[in-house]
Length: 136
Image (cartoon, rainbow, N blue to C red; front, side, top):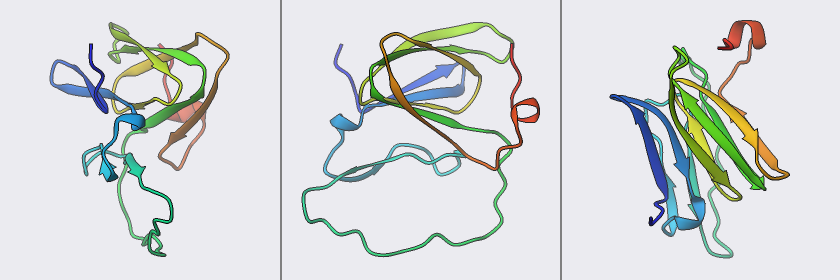
């Protein structure tokens, strides 16, 4: 199976997650998420000496009603199982070194397959485990 830069995972019509493979990106800036997603993921693929203009991001109210999460595997291999919020399993995915999974909906669990270094990001603010998540 040929891998793509982005593999979108759905349950029925609901976008659950996407697996991102930055090494497969085109030159330049490629955004891989939709504007309405609560977390935005883009890939930079630039050559040496490229300058990105100095800028800052404006402060203004925006509403985020759900936490989205990204997990980037710096080293090693992990397995991510995806579930509906009811607990019904949707699918299982191996995320390898240099790949990222972006969680938009549903539930998830991780297994560390090989010794791993992983970077996790999510939109905030974070209100703590009791308010911010439900274990199933």
